[in-house]
Length: 115
Length: 109
Image 1 (cartoon, rainbow over the protein chains, first blue to last red):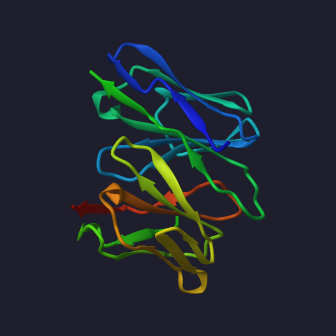
Image 2: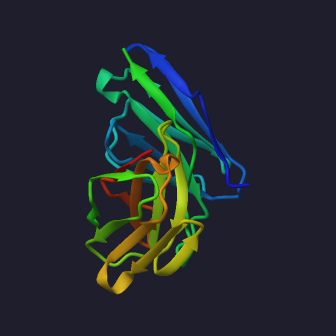
């Protein structure tokens, strides 16, 4: 099973709303990732969790707050977003091996629109 | 950080044609993946290929790590091959994977 699931598929929110994106994997992977992808651009790394600890934060604004409750789950809490935050948000996971094979697998994404 | 360049940026083919997509990277890497992003945004894993050659059906890939490039070959293209192809690279000592800008492929019937 190489599946990463994400909910919701689509989300529309106002600038004063609080919402959360969810990601789940059952491959036993110990690294989980959030990426942001704007239209016609490549995915850009936002956060990495390694063994449930935040290991990379690519200078993301504090209105995005990641959380890793356990090794299978990853959340992204959203608050006071701006219209320019509208994008496809992708979750990924990998084995987090630092000596060899470390293939990343992606979920289908959440398409976020901020009004 | 590692710079990743993909070429060509856009490619239009007739169904049945063959194509080669290229990925150049600026530093030695330990991880290299090719993805196909479909129109719904799903990133589909094509190859994990930090070095060597692999084949999967009509697709094959070659990475020459010492010369810092990778090639993706698509033979007998089909309309369902349309989409964006991304190359992404990284190093062993961290999980920071960098994507190229992608090649947008359109296959016409």
